[in-house]
Length: 166
Image 1 (cartoon, one colour):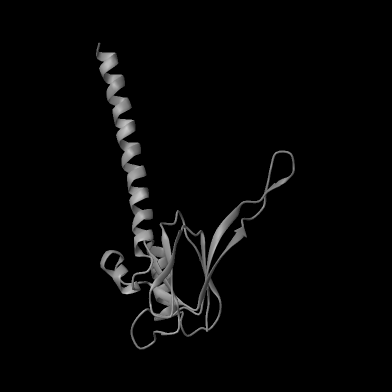
Image 2 (cartoon, one colour):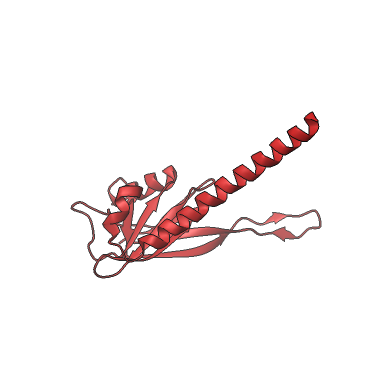
């Protein structure tokens, strides 16, 4: 009898955990869809201020170093790279009002790097910078139209973040 109860408790726990995880993912997707057509400022109530804006944002892949296998071949693993072109702060004197792409990040490493390249010590160097992000948290790319309304939201987990300065 106790084995049956234990088995049912384990099954219930697995089902509950799965339901909670899937429900959270569906809620996030639904909230992204609900934001389409809204002014980008409406996102700040739930996501906070954006990390930065960019003239354009591209996603690319970067290959890891080739690792030899036991048979002598190489294993090359592609990694997602987020490329920010001409980033600027989202507000303040250095903000660029013509940028139509906003970046929000839940990842501390991405937050620090975007801050350094927009208002910090890397802003003045004027050359490409890149960081690797270990186990990235979501980075949201929000594209807006000329009136500031959200037209697209994309959530990615980049392994590399590359900044191409002005």
